Structures are given as C-alpha cells and as structure tokens.
Image 1 (tube, one colour):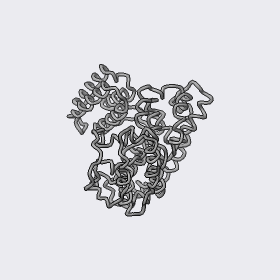
Image 2 (cartoon, one colour):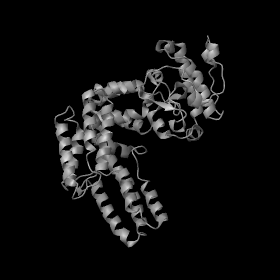
Image 3 (cartoon, helix red, strand yellow):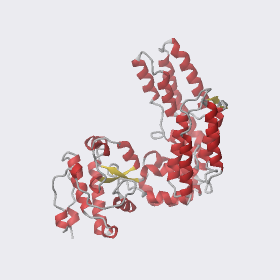
Image 4 (cartoon, one colour):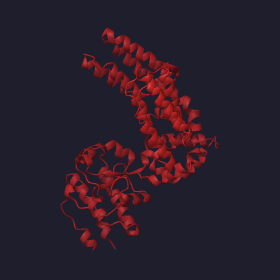
Length: 423
C-alpha cells in the first residue's frame, strides 16, 4: 500500500482531491497538520523548530509571563532554538538582567533597561529627523508652516509632553480590534463575549468628529466604559487605557501620546499628499521610512513593548516562532484548504510571504529548498516513529507535499523522500 502512495505523478492543485476528511479548525481541513505541530516541525522557509500555538495558549492561561523572568526563561529553555532575530537578542538581555534581579518579571527588567535603549533610539531617530527637516526646506511656503507644526508636535511626543490630539473613531476601532486579537489568545469565553459586545457597540461611533457628532461619540464611549466596568475585563490595562484616552481626546484635553513610527509616516503622508512636486514627496517619505522599526532595531523593540502589559510582552516574544498553516499555493491564487496544499511555517514567515508566488518566495528565501527537505525529513522521522498512525495522519501527505513543492517551484525543488519507504 505504501508503495502505491509513493508513486509520483503530475499535480494540479486546483483540481486536487481532498484525501483527508477533517473537521473545520479555523482553516478548513488543517487539524491533522496542527496535531503534528506538537512535534516541533521545522519552518519550511527558516528551518527553525516551530512552537506549537497550543503551548502558548497554555502559557497565557497560566500567566507564566507574570512570574519572575528567571522562571520564564527556564520554561522557554527547551525552545531556545526557536528564537531568532530581535526576539533572541531581547531574551539575551532579559537573561543577563534576570541573573542579577531574580525576583523581577520580564516587564520589570525591560523597564529597568528601557532608558538606555531609548537614548540609543533617539540618537538614531534624531539623525533621520534632521535629514527630513533639511529636505523640507524645499517645500512650498504653505506646506512649510504645516510641516513645522507637525515636527513640533512630534518633538513633544518624543519627549513625553502633553498635546491635544483629535479623537479618531477609525483609530479607536482599530485598537479595539487589536486588543480583541490579544484576548482571543486565551480560553476565557466570557472575555471573548465582552470583546464582541464592545466591538459591536463601537460601530455606533460616527466616522467623523465635529460639533454635530462629538456628543454622540461621547455617549458611545461612556456606554463602552459602563460595559467594561461591569465585565470580567474591568481590570484589563489596554482597554482601560484606550477608554480613558478616548474620553480625554473627546474632551479636547492635552494628553501624553507616545511617538509611533507608523503614525508619524501616515500623518506625514497626509500632510504632503497633494504636494505638486512628487519627487520631493517621495524623497520625504523615503527618509521617514529610515526610522528604526521594532522588527530591525532592538532599541525600538524594547521602547515599544515596555509600555505594554507583561502578558502581551511575553506573547510578542513568542509570536514570531509559532507554527502556522501555510498555503503553498495562496488562497488568492486559487489554493485550496486541503492537506496537499498545506505546510508548516512560522507566523513571521507566513505573514511576510503574504500571497507572493512560491517561485518569488524562493528568491526571497534562497535556503527554502534546504528547509523544505528538513521539513520532509522530520515528517518521515515522525512517520517511522508511529506518530502518523497514532494521529491518524496519512503518509500520503508527505508525497503530496513533495509533489506540490515540485510543481510550484517549477521543478526546481525535487525533495528526496526515499527514506519514507525504508524498512
């Protein structure tokens, strides 16, 4: 029977039959592969052993990130090979400080070192802001004043000085939706119901804020506040902060708004969106894009996350290494929700690829052939250990994966699965 499974043939992903009658689990027919995530499958694009999302869910439920950092590091130790990039560097910083402050949690440790990294970040940002101001000298007069006021407001944000910021219902709904994502990571049904209710009621906020709409917006925010105060999420720091800041903004109070790179670039783009000189417009936005991000700068990462609750800091550190279902042929290109079109990739790599064709993805990640072979080898190892049989996963998935990769890579990647048939 296995010999028949190993027979290779042409593969048309759009016409591919579903070999596994699997129940819906977020992505239809993905539950079999999700069960294999428990065995630290390597990411097909980065090769790192992925962390099973169920483990993070358990950690969040047990609030392990509120414990002393030394204990958290012990829990993460078996997964140390799963961390790369900025997250690995931040964990090294936490590890060094935890050896001295054995009783502090990860937020307390990062808060302690944050001033040092904030100075480093401001130094890098200052050089880019100077370059931006120099280029802005070429702006027409009517734009220069607006730019000057914009940079003065930016300076206040950078130095934690209070400013008056108009309320934005779009921003409010966006932040509320982001908080819901955090809540969804846990298993508390009541909390999820509260978030759904808050999101539903927030739809009553008018999209524009002016003299005719502001009183109604205040009433909606007050009602959301009432819902929050009577709910299981009444002590949620993010929700409390969002409601309080929204009330202050609607009351036109001056408040401290931390500098945010994305918001800065968005506001700059709006300021110069009708600038006749498109070359200057592009030049200014290109300079702004040089500002350090939390994905490429340890300093920016630490300054950003230190303001967040300890559980969210922990979640941020783990999220990039989580196993996720990757559609080899993207859904937008007709890829189906079937095992033959699934693979395991970290959430970071999955998110970065988006709907990029697989051939282009190979150019972006040239070691993909090596890591796909590593992925296959791990699957074959699990098959011979009897894991596939215990989980009722057909070994045909291994063959389907090989054939799918062969087709999507335009025959450039021909994976070796000869060990699958070995005694």
